[in-house]
Length: 144
Image (cartoon, rainbow, N blue to C red):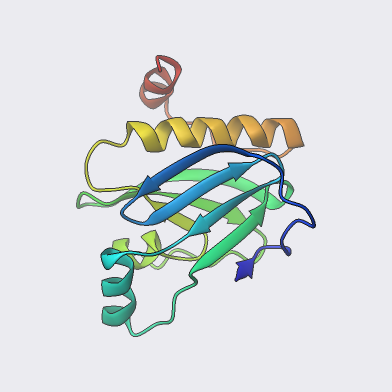
C-alpha cells in the first residue's frame, strides 16, 4: 500500500465511489483511496516494466490540486497533486496509472467530472485548494 502521508487511523464511511477500467476510486471524509486492477492495469505494468502501486490512500488535507487530464488520444484521468507526488511523464497510459492518478475509461467522462466535483467539494471542507474546471466543464458539472 502506498500513501501520501499514511493511511487514516480509522476509515470514515465512503461518500462516493467510481468504478472503471483503471480500478476503483473511493472518496471518504478524510481521504481518497485508489485501488488499481484489471487488464488495462496489468498490460501497462507489463509493457512499461515498472512495478505500479496497487493501492494508494491520499489524505484530503495533503492534496493541493485535482486535475482532469486529457491526452491527445482518448485517455482521460484525474491526477492528484500533493507534496511528493510523482511528476507527469507525458506518456498518457503511464501517467493514468501513476500512484496519484485514476482512469475511468475511454468514453464518456461525465462520471469522472462528477467525482472530481465531489472531491473538490470535500477539499473545500478541509481548507485545501483545488483547481477550478474551465468554464465549459464547470457548466457541465453544475448541471448534473
